[in-house]
Amino acid sequence: MKGIIFRSLEELVIENLGMSAWNALLDEHSPAHRSYVSAVSYPDEELYALANGVAEKMALPLPDVLSVFGRFLFGSLAAKHTAVLAELDTFEKLIMAIDSVIHVEVAKLYDEPNLPKIEATIVNDSEILVDYRSPRKLGFCAEGLIYGAADYFNKQIEISHNRSVTQSGEHTQFVVKILA
Image (cartoon, rainbow, N blue to C red; front, top):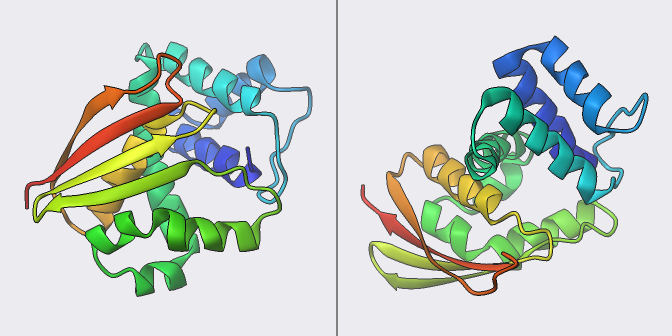
């Protein structure tokens, strides 16, 4: 997992729980003296451990924490990559371009980004199916990213999980309903 993801989690924790909470999470759930650098890769297990630590500290289910983090992450990434968002000027365009544009740009910026496979299909004017595939099993974070994109474009949406195709969580299908 790239350091930029850890840095965004750090921002979220500090913003909501304070620097001492982040330092405590690092002490409990990451190697000694770990400092996350955006372009560097770190073991996925460290992100899972930190996210679990946040869930424990806030007494929230891990899926809720991952969804909130994904929503926050979208805003953080959007602020850093305004040129990409200038080209994808609607919520629908952005969702349809996750693999073909956004992930291509990410691959240019970061060495071996190990991205999920996201396929989107427009069902009608108010519904998009989004298939998420990744051995990282971060579907709830992907859900949060979709909500974050909707926030960015001032869209009201509702997401349901059509199915978890595998018991492991490596493949999830979301139904994104555009309400307004």
